[in-house]
Length: 515
Image (cartoon, rainbow, N blue to C red; front, side, top):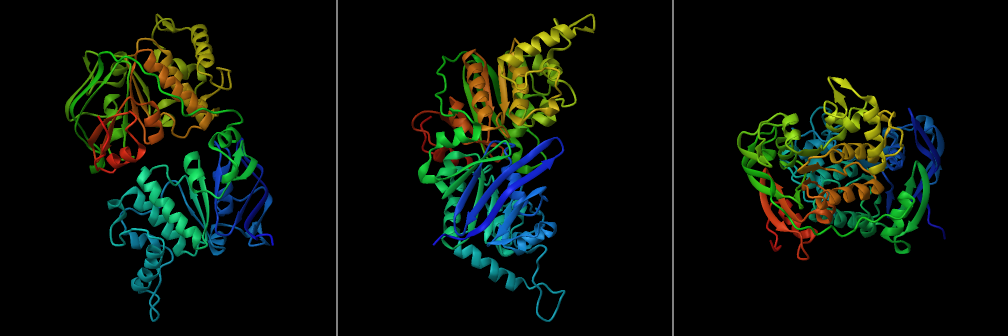
């Protein structure tokens, strides 16, 4: 007998201004399975699931829930929740000043039988404790959300969905901000939930995790449905090829280069922050020419503040930062750049690109006041165009036309514009690469990692700040780990180092890794 489908989506279309996000795609779910939905950024996977969750109306298509066709003219988030569909978004939707318990029941607060105003916290705790005990989710109901870990926040979001009656749970990039240990714990919870009959959609681009947790895997590319496969019938390279449309190689060996003199020295540095846990406290390290020093850590532990201080974007309270032979602490960003800094900022949209300008302007913006682009305050459009075309070709930026506005580029190609500007100019000593492949598709990740490795081979020192452990391990020669604003450990990236050991340092513990 054929298994009945809990969810079936057919011929789904969704148009946003300037982009067809979903183009005739389909997706289905069987009860009690973990079904991963994968694809590059912009492939349409999150849009598909937001349609299922009722967040977006669809332009065309059909949705069946437990075999019954849904009236899409009346379908919204409230309808989805009533049908037992819950979603945990990539950005947690929690009120940080409220307790975990208050967050879970917010909007569906139980009241005491004899009063519509008095909240029945005892009944709420009993219901919530059922999920905590059944699914082995360690959460502290009376703590404020601002005082719990990222992993615990995610468990709170899952309980919140279950509390509202979800038996189909959509998880959007659930491990993006988790350590390997936290991810493993999440997978244990999901496995228990699956055995208990909960159906799970796992949206991700981390193919190792997809292969570890999934029953079936569906692939989208360019808004279209590509295929659905059983985990046992595929491999990571095959999935990557389906996602991108070509062979992808993310596990290439990093180059081994003889290191030179220090190009960056950070000495006993203190950097302020709006958050107590991310204040930099007594940070010291150095980066040598021809090496990649990775900075690992869970987001929010001071890595962003450190990068901004080096780039001249945040003040230094105490200590000294030296680039080459120049002290750059508390100097203006343009001075730091003139001293030899190439900077791929953490947020390319906020600090990396002027989206209202052309690709040409963005590619030469840091040099526009210098020869050959400018003479006697007159800008040479011809030289700008010539150099921008060379950089477009060299860094494989698509589309190729330098007259295009930066706002029209995909995440991967927009990031390549930033990389090309920073690495295309001569005279650089240090590449500060902050989250260089965040929000970038898998094909562009491959290219950007190769360019970072190439910069090392050409003699630059590289300071790589990344929350992606796979990226840190793929590119770094040495690794420092930041935890609550301090360096919790330093290790050499050799055969003794594993992501589990690195994850222990990220959690503030100790790792038995040779250094």
